[in-house]
Image (cartoon, rainbow, N blue to C red):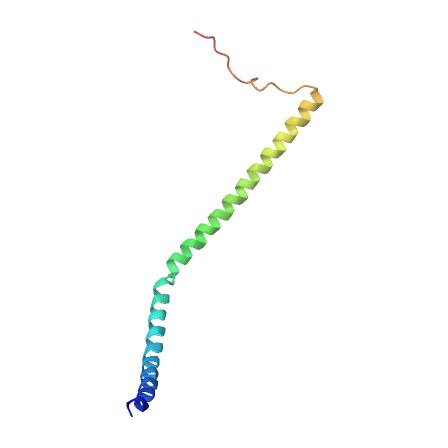
Length: 100
């Protein structure tokens, strides 16, 4: 007679553990997920990031403009040197100092 009761007790015990355990595990996992989620960005920080992004883009444009000017100047100097038949010396503008 004892063996006849073991199966239903085990079944109902399993049902109780699952019915309580699954919601508890889900709640725990939601809490862990919320802790690792990034906090929401407030409006002031979003505006500040937008201004930084705009400033960075304008600096990149200016840097590209300067680089283009440098490439153009280098091209002109190279063409001028080719037209003259000689290349300028690297130390042409340097001041020579006497040792001692």
